[in-house]
Image 1: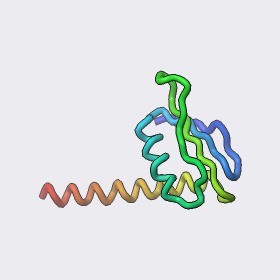
Image 2: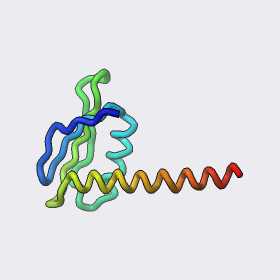
Image 3: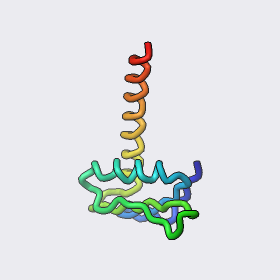
Image 4: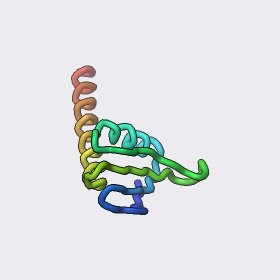
Length: 88
């Protein structure tokens, strides 16, 4: 997976991600944080990579994005464990 940071400021970050599913997963998880003012992705053309846009209310946007990634990883681990238990 390729990730390209397009814009990075304290309260805003824009990241190009080469996977629409990951962009949507992050967008959704970011809305779980009350400090997030905007979490959306955009692309001018379906053949282009999505750009995830995150704006926050005074908190570091990069940290909030990294925290969301950690939460997704934790959830993924939980789901994997549950599936493994089910198939024993």
